[in-house]
Length: 112
Image (tube, rainbow, N blue to C red):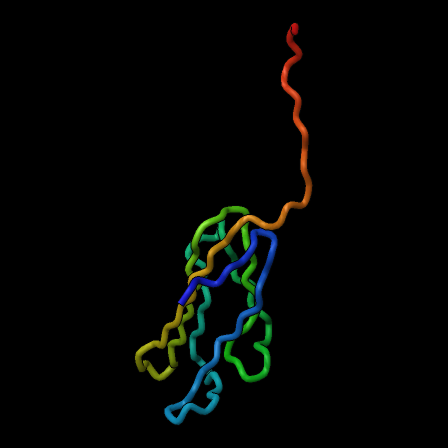
């Protein structure tokens, strides 16, 4: 699967979805620890919502930074009961945005 593409002046929303053993939506329980993090803050930052959107255990935005390259967004869901954590990740290619302006630079004048 190809990496997600994001311009350096863009952001994208995210949602972390949890499912039970039957594949039905699951809710976070008190004490569960949920972490969404960027592998490189110069390329992307994670801005969580104060309250996750309906149907998710975490949501927010991934905001592109000034550096271009490939960044990994890692998600971890650790149940409070001590059972093993669940993890997920996404690779995002941060690329230059569309042209927003141009400049014509002149050199030093010399004799013809």
